[in-house]
Length: 103
View 1 (cartoon, rainbow, N blue to C red):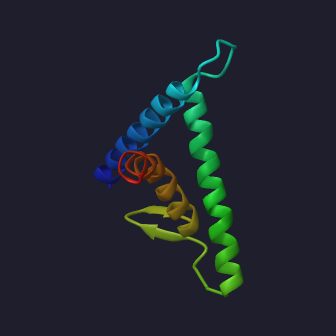
View 2: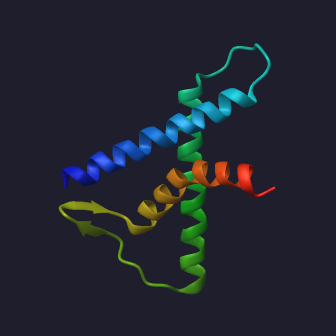
View 3: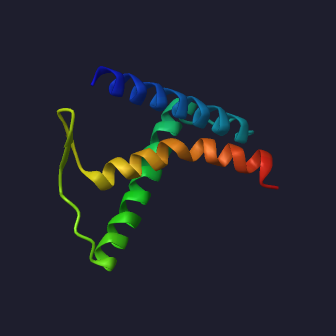
């Protein structure tokens, strides 16, 4: 269970660091703004929330029955929220791959 939390913390740290770097490079003007880390956290939560809403609507539309809670190694969570957070953590790497190789 400790290895899961260490892996999760590492993925969270690396995802936020890459998001902060990408956002810092996009800003040019000198106006007061949120720090890149604060913006990266807001972006991560926004993406995860959007993915969660989309998945929730898709599951409702298709009539798929999912358990409301799942327990894995003593950790109880909502499956759709876990999938949404996973997609949000992977999003900056997928965007980086697209920018480098997709054009």
